[in-house]
Length: 168
Image 1 (spheres, helix red, strand yellow):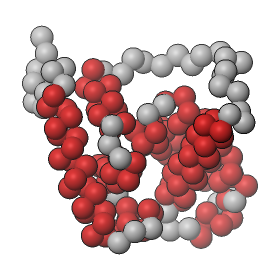
Image 2 (tube, one colour):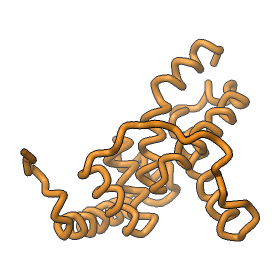
Image 3 (cartoon, one colour):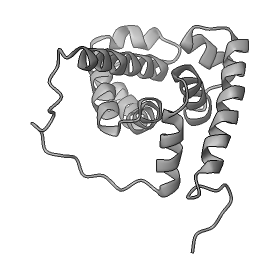
């Protein structure tokens, strides 16, 4: 993968992967940092990515693993929690339904949340989710079914999020 191809890959994938990781971990700032680091690593491994069937999946998996590692370090107290060194990033406020969805996703078990995000937000078929997560397809189907049911129950309790409702 040459520099131009990598730039195109980055441009087309960055926002999508950040959105997917944000839905998995619940922190947009952390998602952006982890995805950025994953792309730095992808640049260093761009020759291997050339041969990879799904370079975006490689970046997403790397970013997710980075997020998990960062969380573990934070929980162990090895890393200061004050991240006020850099200026806050300005971004558009999320819609009420988006906030409700992310809040509901946070309440699900990690395995269900990951399966739902990869299948419905990353738009991966069940077999690709199974391959990326490293479990059988039947396990992914069960996680999707249970996750959708739990998500529906959580979102039906939220008066601000009703499917198909219009707001004046």
